[in-house]
Image (tube, rainbow, N blue to C red; front, side):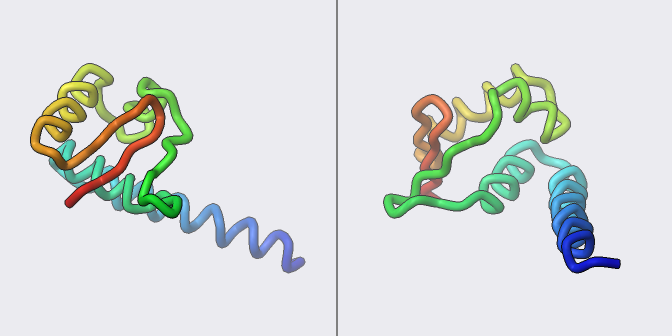
Length: 91
């Protein structure tokens, strides 16, 4: 087995493990926080979401409207600051 295919297999394994970790959470907020914690932050602590909101909802295994409501609650509580596909988490 070549090192290239081993790297590819290892990367796929990491992605699947992250997905299992996210989907094993019962609460939507927990799923969101765990997913966001897997994404890189820029110098200002801003995370760029690589999905549309619909695709993110599918990735998290939730309804898009429920995701929108939870984002709104998290913004109201000062946990998230959202600007289009960029977010800053203040926990």
